[in-house]
Length: 122
Image 1 (tube, rainbow, N blue to C red):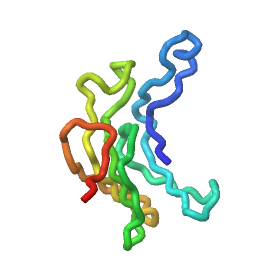
Image 2 (cartoon, rainbow, N blue to C red):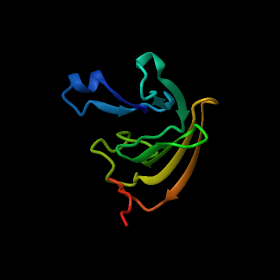
Image 3 (cartoon, rainbow, N blue to C red):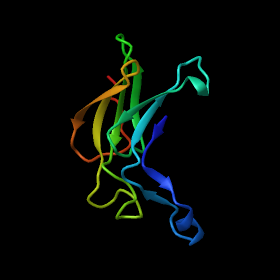
Image 4 (cartoon, helix red, strand yellow):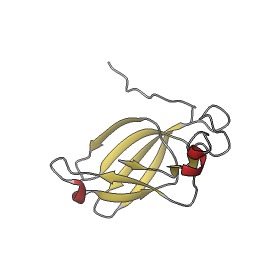
C-alpha cells in the first residue's frame, strides 16, 4: 500500500474545487502486508517523498526484501491542479524495501518521462 503526501483537502472540496493537494513534509511510505496477514500486520517503511499512480511490478526477493518498480513523480497536484501534464513527469524507479530494517534503496531505471509501465514479453 502506498501512502503519499497527496491528500484529500476538505476545504477545496467544500469550495467545489479539485479536492486533492500536495502536502509536502507529511512523508511518504509503503505498507507491506504479509500474504496471510491482517491489517494489524502491516509493516510501514519510509520511502522518498514522491507520488506514483501506477506500479509496474512487485515481488519478494530471495533475501526477504520486496522489489517494487513504479513510475515516480517528485510531487502531484501542487502547482498544476489538473495532473502530471506540465513539467512534472514521472521516471521509472526501482525500490528495494527491507521490511526487517525498515529501509528503502532507490534506483532510477529510466529517466524517460512515462506512465502506465509494462514489462516486456518475449
